[in-house]
Length: 170
Length: 341
Image 1: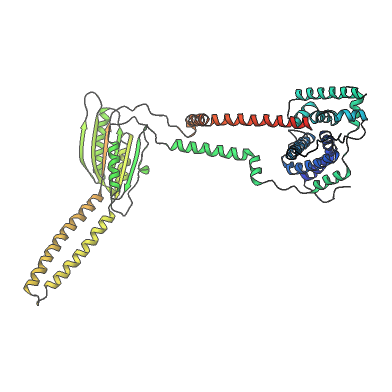
Image 2 (image 1 turned 120 degrees about the vertical axis):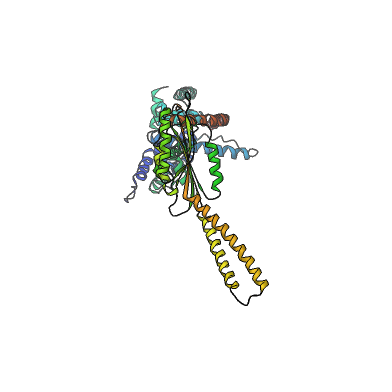
């Protein structure tokens, strides 16, 4: 599929190109964060809708487009988590705890998939940002709203935990 | 952590499904909704901040430079009708005391307010001049008298005081024809350094017009009474009454004529009070321009800023604390959400 050939304003074309370039990154990050591919799909779409509305405010001097999009994706996911929590609270009396193993990316070994599923979202997201998307420490820190040192610490703990779980599974 | 595991994670990077890709592409060709005007405006804060700062600065300059100066000579002008007389008197009283520390004024005839040509006006002026020493005081006094006479006026009074030691002074009251008041002021200004001057103009034309109208009406009534008295058929009693009325009208006529002459005389000659002194000038205040008062303006702005800080400071601090607390709370909530997810 190609974009329509009609003339587009420079900023609009740029958004389309940016969205195209970073769609997989945003989607992958959200899959790791939510452990749910269909949910990640919805959240990714919502992320890009928000990004389009905020596109005029995007300043490439402050952060790369990928970092900016990941920030929006994270906010979108957190909003969804909050909404889910409220829903769970309302339905507390009758709710069945969500014990589904999740929906991790394909291509992972069963052991790694199980180990990743055992990590918290906070741990998974730091792995997604630093390993999967290969953001540097500062970029990841900007997305997570913490210091670069805190990112390193969190990543170290997450990988250690992942390794331990891998060892247990093996 | 083994490289193998990390590679496995990297290689298994999820790829967005075609459906999502299509949705995002559709978004890419859509025109984003324009931002609300206020949001766009506030986004460019400098567009608000810069003009606002300029306006405040200019206002400060304007306000401060228009404040009455506590030092320096005064040049006041009082113009008005009958109500203006009181104001002129007050102004005269306020300016009457001893000479203040003053800066020299470069007064001239052009800067003086001139009476309106063609209208009857009472004009009075006051001038305070400084001369160098007693010799010049004497010369200036004589010249002032000559100026009044040369312009067709006269000297109403002179008080000359030249002690062997101390400050000498002379007070003159000159009467000069009103149309030549500007010339008189110009020539008198040249006698010394002007310390202050005041010109008062009171319009008398309306009063003169009223008196003239009354005079015409009075004369009309007198003529009518004369015609009635000329009648041969007039009874003695009626004649006596008419004659009494005629006498009254003639008396009124005389009063009106006197009043009109007086009013015209008031307008014909202007009064100029000239005070000459040998008193040394106090150190003259430096003539400061608007930009020269920058320090004063900055001090004023600094004081205002201090007031604002003193009043708003606690609220700002409280706001900061609340903002930090909310931020911390949000962070904790996010961490908890992500830990639970």
